[in-house]
Image (cartoon, rainbow, N blue to C red):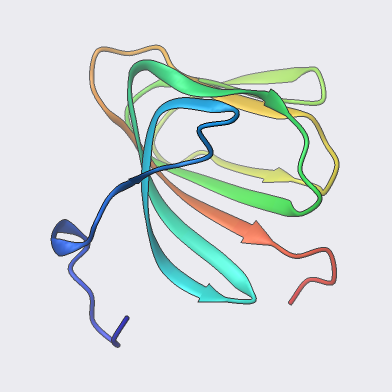
Length: 111
């Protein structure tokens, strides 16, 4: 990936089909920290799961619900959610339009 990237020209791939349905992503940074632009189809999302790395989710458009360790919040544009390594988490698109977000995977050592 170069310095400037038009994500509309990138390949969109299924994200984590083991725990997600209707979730597509294109990675825009993969240098220790991984950043993926993610699209979630209506009625789709991630089932509750745990990862060995942390996340930062930043929602750009759409609506839905996100949960972390038993706490739940309504998704709206501008919502940021920090998930520590090992915490149970999920999100779902409950709206009629595509949900978009930036998903940042953060290794346990923070680099």
